[in-house]
Image (tube, rainbow, N blue to C red; front, top):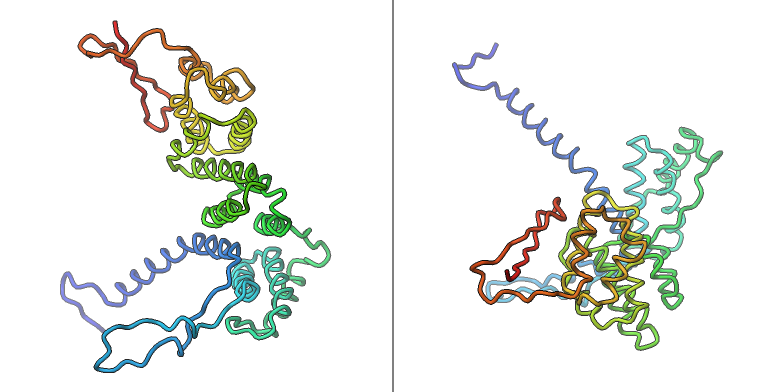
Length: 336
C-alpha cells in the first residue's frame, strides 16, 4: 500500500488527468484537421518530395547547408489525392459515417489504378477492399449508392481545361459554399490575367468574385474596388451588385454584416452621382437594408450642399450607428 505525504498528488491521478487533457484537445482539433485534409484535395500541383539524395553529407568543414532540390522525387496530384481519400475514408469509417467513407474509398479505388509507379502512396489494397465491403454491408450503400457529387474544385478544373468558360459561376457558388481556398482562387485569377485581352472581362469578374469572398471572411478590401468602380462601365457595376446580392442571399449573420459594411464604405468613397450609388439605392439590392440604414445611406446619392468646415469650432458631429455589429462610425463635420 502506497502512502503519500499531505499535499502530495498521487502520480497515477496526475497522469490520468494529463491524458484526459491531451485527449480532449485532440478531439477538439479533429474537425479542423479533417477540414484541412479536405482542402488539400483541392491542390492540383505536382509536389516535390525530398529523399535521402537531397541531403548533402556534412563534415567538420561544412559551412552552408542546403538541400539538393534537383534530387527530389515528384509526386503527382493523383497520387497524393489517392492517399488523402484513403485516410479520410478510414476516419469516416471509424466515425461510423459509412456513406462518406464509401465515397472516399471509391475515389481511392478509382485513383490508385491511375498511378503507375507510386512513391508516396501507402495504401493496403486488401484493407481497402475490406473497408469497401464493410461500408456496403454495414450501411447498405450499394443498394442506395449516393449520386456522384462533383466538387467545386472538379468543376473549376473542368472550366480551366475548357478555356475558363463557366469559371465565374463556379466562384459565385463558392462564395457561399467556400470549398475552394483563397490561395487556389488567387492562382486562378493570376493565370487568367496572363491570357491577354481575350479574357479581360473574365479576369475582372473573377477579381470581383475573389474580393467579395475575402470580404465575407472579414478582410478589409474596399480600396481594391473603390478605384475600379470609379471608371467602370455600367456592366461591371451591375455584375458587382449581382455578386454582392447572391452572397447576401445565403450569407450568415456575420458575413451579411461584413458585406453591408463593405457596400457602405464603397458608397462613401464613390461620387454622389456614381452609377454604383444610384444602382444600390434605386434597384432591388436595397431590400437587403432596413429603413434606418437606407435613410442614412441616402446621403450618398445627394450632391453636397454644404462644404466641410475650415474650422471645427462650431461643427456638428453626427455618428452613424450602421453597421452596429462592426462598431464602425462615420463622422460628418458640417459648417453651421
